[in-house]
Picture 1 (tube, rainbow, N blue to C red):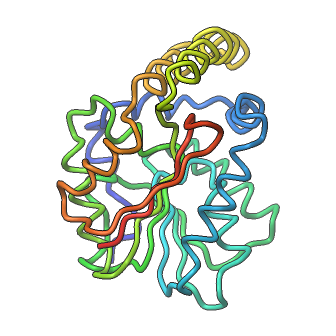
Picture 2 (spheres, rainbow, N blue to C red; picture 1 turned 90 degrees about the vertical axis):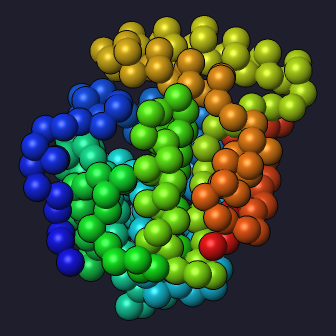
Length: 244
């Protein structure tokens, strides 16, 4: 089994890849601020769902700086195979530093392509993804490649757990969410981070992303059968659980 993809496919970047390779050191801090630290609570609920059936093999897809992965590692059954995959080496460097500071062992951090993962068919019992499913699917020309690859590496009966921004069903809440993202996240995030394109993209994609029901429909198109979800904070975020 390959540990790493070779030279990121000879520098053939995926959509958004260059943006996430320029991630600023303040990435984690800004995430906490803009979600009022609620993102931590939502990740905890995702971890609980991922580990519910004591899986043997778990991946945090688009792991970024490892926030979801390390929470899984702290609660996983001894001997659980754990890995995090991401296409941004700078993000993985931060994840590696965090992993060392937490004295966590036995976790593989893999620099790779979510559309061409170095795993056999039906490999994982569970895959989690936090705040990156939108990046794989929102107006992304490689959307179907990502979705089919995720489905391929999950075992029959295995689950895919998604924590992501969502579109509130209530019109007032939806408008408030748009106002918050465009006035605070877009402007302040871009200014403080020094990476304006990244936070402009975040605000635009989050306020125009699929509704929770539309995400269910999308997952059904690639073969997931049992799909459930729950909303957080009036629908500004959601957790989906899809079973293969």
